[in-house]
Length: 495
Image 1 (tube, one colour):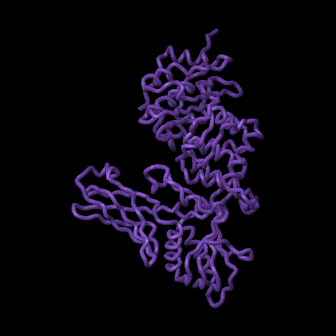
Image 2 (image 1 turned 90 degrees about the horizontal axis):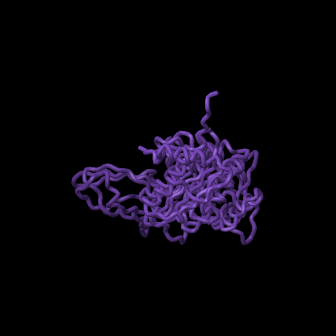
Image 3 (image 1 turned 45 degrees about the vertical axis):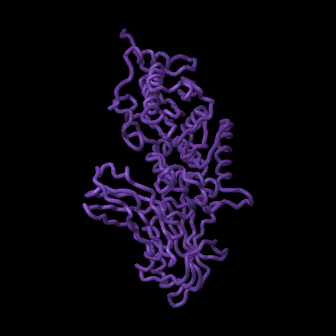
């Protein structure tokens, strides 16, 4: 449970200070006290509190800092403004071959369009459309077209961010990402053996264990987990191998990203197509759809506001990165939901998305000096934004035509998303809407906090320090949010 950090006298002082016209440069006493207790210097904190156009507090607010996942607010707000609320990613099956007697005489192209909802079930539905159209066999190859993003495979050759490259939060998207390339692995052990199940099942992909069974606490099974691997045999088949230790008499589920995404799609396509009675004669290769290709089947993702909500509430890195790249590759279309932007030689999708963010900020008078966007998700050691830039962006969010959609995407204190267990017992509970951010050396929050009188405040707080982990930085930023939520109380004298 959250314990109030303030004595009544401090609460009154906070309320009085919040009404002063001049901005505070010094952090509130409860925050300073916590910093001292946690061994964190005040210079490790950048903070900004705005009430309307008035600056209530500004501490190191102009210094670019690591924002962690609060950077998703930049991506999602600018994404809504740039792409619009009816924007949808799209996946297509195309060909320029002829269909004769149930045989597609040519290649079948699976073209990615940044469809955030692309799943095995979606692919099966698209293949069913082909089957219902009378196609039973594809004589040519399955061509995977990821050309919407440039480069098409951002994940190739990139060093792992941390020691868990197989984890979902580390997935690097491309324009044709099915099931986020994840495998769900069910592990059930007895005292002598471990049984494995893998979902989705993939043609040509099996799973096996080299894990050692040990006496241990099932709840701490992750302590023995080691990086799994995908081994391709001479016959082209792939074997997923689990390593490490696993407790005896234990049942757990883990999701992993280890299979090469071409092999993943190949295995999923062949299995689903075979289940429908279809056959693929050729190979699965990378390539581009021919200019004269015609559409056979398509799928559209949910509208962007729904994707934005699923990005910010649980802090989904892959979705945030997809939205960011979409700004550099697609534009809104009132009929189709989205359409590709014209290609410009020499430009990457990232550079175009970065320009879209900066142009949006400059158009609203927000100085982008010092801003660094690596991927738009905050899962980065390079990304930087100042509390002042974030605060001005959040002010612009309140004035946006899509303010309701943007605010609805943000976690609610003590209620849902990444804030569901935070600020219980604080006046901010159930009222403040805050995006969180956490890395090894970063803790941050940014969003909207109403004070005791119901007046909306923009609040940004970032702690950048090697000692920010283990709850220390979180206590500091939550104390600032609580201070704002308790401020602004008005007392009146009866006549």
